[in-house]
Length: 500
Image (tube, rainbow, N blue to C red):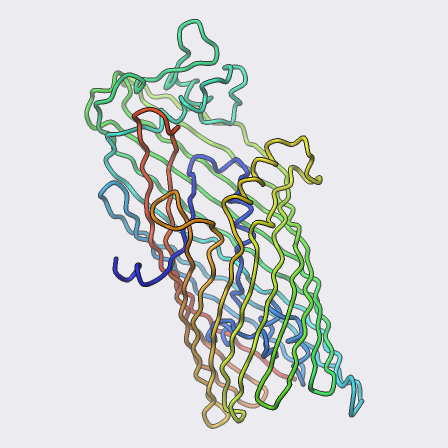
């Protein structure tokens, strides 16, 4: 625990039973992005905004494309593993997930103008960079004698007529299987075996499998003015894929609960989408050893489609039952906030450099748009989500520092460190408060031989997440528990490339 007091961590509250409902967490998921690009850039902490001449630098500053003096193509493979340790009701569980993907693939074409002064190059670029990796496996379990998920179904249903519960809701599936029942003479008030029973022991097990990622596909153009000023712009297309399979299992250990024995609640979510945005940037060389960069990323609109379904199975009085919701589909869009990026790099006799990137992003500018249309003033649900975005989130700063040193003009050693600022508005002191950052460290090496190059990098990210498998109203005696999940993500990345 001392390590995590020293390492500032990210806290994300996730409600396992609400995978079908669009909320402020969807806005954050696609707004909280960082480059996962070439091995050279990653080994240097992705602090390449003022350096350029690396295709993944376009994620931060498209003016970096103008730094190329020759054409180049490259591809990057990423081996990703995330290990999670989850703590839930005095119990610890560990899980792992491995993923292999292509982080980065790009083509930069250097086009000399033939001028000895003025605009000397007009460069073109096309390629893709991964900016988010959603892969994660989480498992936790514990003995709960305070509450049951059935109470969540009961509380969620109260006040809603049975005919309006909705066939995709957990409350409807629970009502259909007699886990909750109508109060006598009432169509909108409910009770369960737990309503008047406060003496029980339940084993709860939760498994969360997440996958997918987000990629930035760029079309870029840039110009080199007298090797002193470099400008660039890009049109950016985003591709999104996110999946989640969420399983909650609960079984009675002591038989004090009348009739109820166990249940299994499975939620599946598959989200896909695409979007568009733009970036502009400039790099200046005021001295031989200093480079300065500045870039602006416009807000971007991401159009998404959710496909989802749920299955609830239960056993009551030794009779098993199961009910699945119909497959659901929902189209909507999310506006992700823009960024301002400032960079500086200090060079050492062509042998190496130290570079710093600073980014500012205001997560309060993220927005959920109902359907594929613009937000309507009468859309109370969308307005409610966006009010939560503005109240829960804040502006944050990202800092990345990297260094490289070259031996014998062939071999390079690299290292980096940084913090990704938390989007949350309040201090961390429990599962309902969230002010933290994600730290990372990186290292790597490179071999540059003629027109060929090979780079490798190792990056570790540290984070803490809080997961509530269900929630209950604050009134009443029943309490729900939250799992604390500490994760370490390891990226091993290899890039091969050719200059021509």
